[in-house]
Length: 107
Image (tube, rainbow, N blue to C red; front, side, top):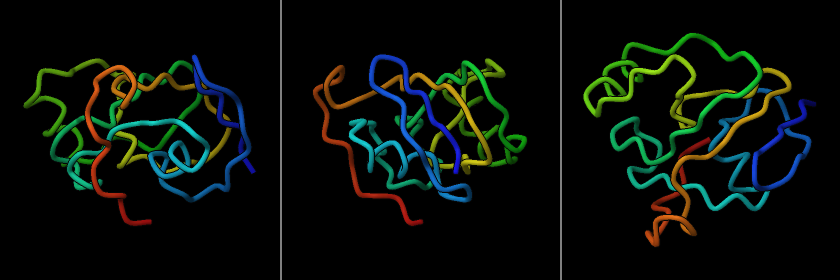
């Protein structure tokens, strides 16, 4: 199990190998995922404060670059798999955007 620290929310344990977006949602973080986890919309962005994930896929890199998000520590939580302890900050949530989250991403 990994410890996920979410700034402005809480810390919780998560099973490694799960998509970060679903882990966040399952633990009360109202993160957006408007495209349903297809790496298209960037609404599930998180800022990675601490922790390491696999390198960005080509699709994730292209999607982020197309929207102007080129920072190395900005990731799409729908494309990140939990591999260990981390600290993240969700960028867009239902509370701070007044948008509906979108369809739940597949596991």
